[in-house]
Image (cartoon, rainbow, N blue to C red; front, side):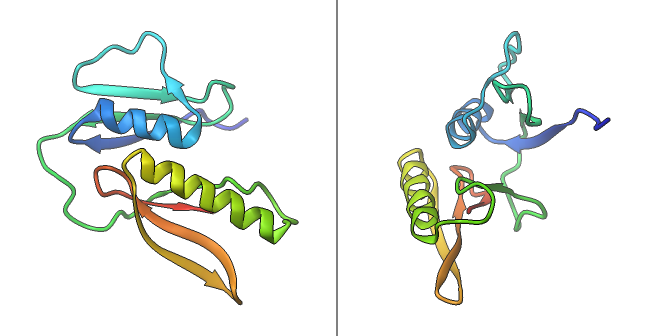
Amino acid sequence: MATHWTLGCDATDPHALAAFWAQALGYVLEPGYDDPDGASLVDPDGVGAAISFLRVPEGKSAKNRMHIDVRVAGEPPWDLAERERLIRAKVEELQGAGATHVREQHYDGVLGHVVMLDPEGNELCVA
C-alpha cells in the first residue's frame, strides 16, 4: 500500500499560488483548511497527492531542485499532432493564469515539453 503524502511548497502569496495550481492541475481547495498564511489543495477524485503552500518571508533564490510536470497528453502511444495541440492549449491557459513561457524542448522534431514558470517563478513543465 502506498503512503499518502503532501507536496509542501513555500510561497510569497500562498492563496494566489494555490489558485494557479488548482487551475493547472484540476485540484480544489482542501475542505476545512482555513489559514491566512497557508493554503492546501487536494485532488477532487482523491487519487493524487495533496499540495500545501506556506507563506515564507524570503523569495525564490535559485533553480528548483524538484518541479511539477503537468502531463496533459496522457500516456503513450500518442497521436503526436493531438499531443502537441493539448500541450499548447495548456500552455496558453497557464499563461492566462500568470505563468511565463520559458522554452520548448523538441526531440527529433517532435514537441516533448514546454518549460514554464508559475506566478512566483517556480519551474514547471507541460508535457
